[in-house]
Length: 397
Image (tube, rainbow, N blue to C red; front, side):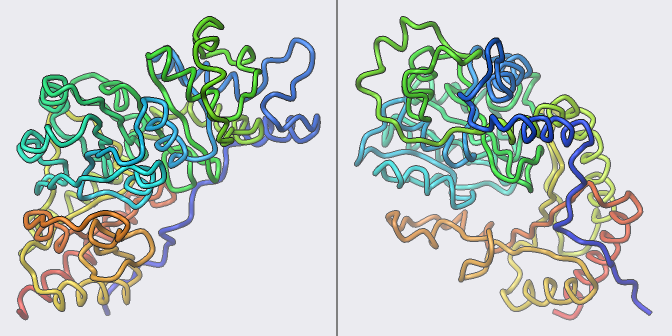
């Protein structure tokens, strides 16, 4: 009889006990709003920002309501105006082009490579079309960031990094989010720290930080931020920067602070699971493993593989057969959006572009979550199931 996996692909680990105790302390005193603090109290949100800035080696940090809010706020803070073009990956998730559209700007998509990263040759060819790149490190894959920054610096392009899937990752020793002008991170349940929803923004730029803090809804309480520029910077921007409230509260910050202290340990655990699945898939007929460059330290909270040039029916048959054995795979090639697997031609608020290379690759991308609730034995079993079902469909084709 064929083995069946019985675990859940959406079950996260419990919130750590020290985070639960910190949350209970906030609930007991009732000061959930980030600016509602007692005499001499910094507040959980301000402390989170201070600690995350130090962890990332950044001057400034702002905690906000979501990763998507961080992205849109970054665009506004660097001065993107309605009608401006903004470059971004063809392979990403909807909040990235959504944040561009939310400020009235126009997404210009750049091709994806078989490494699932932005195509640097296509980026160089389109570098004269925009002054901003919102770079999505989609599903945790980092491109050659040294080369990307060479292209963008030469063209005068400001880079915002979407690090929703790369908190704790690095390229050539530089942490993800620290190459560009702004790094944006998500704290949503399926990311690397879990507060349900939430986001973090880091930058070294005084005015970007001040504008972002004002936009987040600081009113004139910016002096209560511990990871912010001095008051003289706020004097330059405070009357001309709109309030677009999206603050993080003290309850979520309290939950996050202990989790961030354990981030490196969690990264190692994810990568152990990722490599177990990856090793089990290697050599499967018809399946392409996405190789990780030696310069990259990644966070394997999800894994992708390619069924390149397969028919739509054959890919769907693999997904169906794996699901029947308890393994949940997501396909980015589906013509209609399903859950989070929409693609650039699904976002009809953006101009349709012809991206034949991306169309071919998207048609073959299979995606799977790797939650920490899986054991290494679970991961080995999942790989066996995928290998068996891909092989069966491939051999019958």
